[in-house]
Image (cartoon, rainbow over the protein chains, first blue to last red):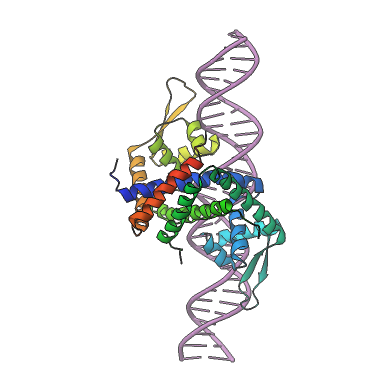
Length: 145
Length: 145
DNA sequence: TGATATAGTTAGCAAGGCTAATTAAACGGT
DNA sequence: ACCGTTTAATTAGCCTTGCTAACTATATCA
């Protein structure tokens, strides 16, 4: 067993906690009837707005061919649509349809409600601590370019 | 836009923060040269100790056939081995090899070091807040049976 | 002993990750 | 104005990882 400094020990527990939390929240997603990568891409579209395929691939940390296929699936399910960008006719603009937006909001509500139910069992004080920690974590881990 | 209560707003931000944090940490994993599911299963073996295939599948929230194939891959890479359980000859005991254990520790160190580097930019006070929040989150989200 | 239950594997399918190669459009230097 | 280069997206083809259904082997128990 390697020796861990205090900060590394904190990092380790933070890491495990994040894994544990998302693993539980993810269970709610099956109710959407959408496969994980499709749900995640749709989420970026709904909350990030219309964007090109390359932008969407970058946001999801996958390669363009992978995203192209995911968008194919979303289109065939009527959840997103492609239009050509008039300024640059090589590029496409991908947008969520109304149906896609609605499905995504339902799923988001399920996840958030699930977490909120658990958080509601804590005291005001404990929830304040979590809020403080979120601010600190965002300070420590800046958005990637 | 739906109205969010304070608790749901906290849940939402907690959720996004966890996604963001793990997305960044995950980048470190490619250095291990191991596919994600294999790395994760190996991690359970190293930190959870030897166990049966069903136990390992349950721990990873996958079905036994999926885990059977992942263990096949780990075995063929010399990272884990199967032995028959002498008490119940239907069952197998899966254990990490020395090589598997070493590779896992290296990867874990990379992830933790990465997070620790970011956390080290915070004040003692901010890190204490994160530690407090981890305790509260564990209280709110109990381990699954 | 024989029916049933349990542990694991095999077979076959779908989703989602990749690289390499292709197509079409835009850009840029001469 | 042209031709070479770059860029956006897609196509083709591979691997990994998820699933269910069906099978084998062993254990359990009435």
